[in-house]
Image (cartoon, rainbow, N blue to C red; front, side):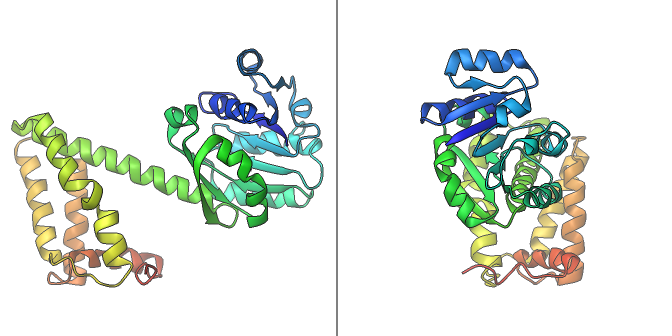
Length: 300
């Protein structure tokens, strides 16, 4: 397969290199021509001095760029790839992009007979280097099948997410969960340190109490919320009380704890609206009411 790879940065460099190592005919392009030149010297393949040169005769064009505006410019701009990609070719955006922009770009490409997939990756530079990225893919199933050799050259697992745009949506949500978890954990450790707790003791205990089988996704969302069980045995009122105590504790010792205050408000509101005796996993009803749809009942 002849592949055009646009964006030779920290992620794009190892990803494109793996494609070459697997025998794909790869032409790279980057606005920093020196970066593309150095890539070819180190890994092989060919260098395009323009988008048109990089994309000419390509069966697949991969973009790994900062955001959706860059992707749109590369694909649909005046001198973009759309000027040289032929009907039946496929464009694959592996960047982290806006899902609605992805659908818009896909619609415009479809009018020209060009397929489009969104295939953002999880794992960062470390996993890009050893080709163990997790790849989320949205779009036509037949086209995903067609591109599986490309994906498996760069990653370890492909998650089919649904129609075009769904992979970018899930990637954004995954990053949101990870970013939120990071700051919650850091805030908790900072509060503990302010109180005088040992950092190593905290991280050891939190690993046991909050990760793996204790992680709320595995312990509560999947087995309790999505199955309608709501049977953890801990009342919503008790959880609201504990969160409130944690917020008060942080405030009293003068620790920065903006998130704790927000969490107290959410759990207090839930106890008022849903009831203190309800299982604490029934807090999901706050979001169901807000979106007008049920989360529960979707699991097995």
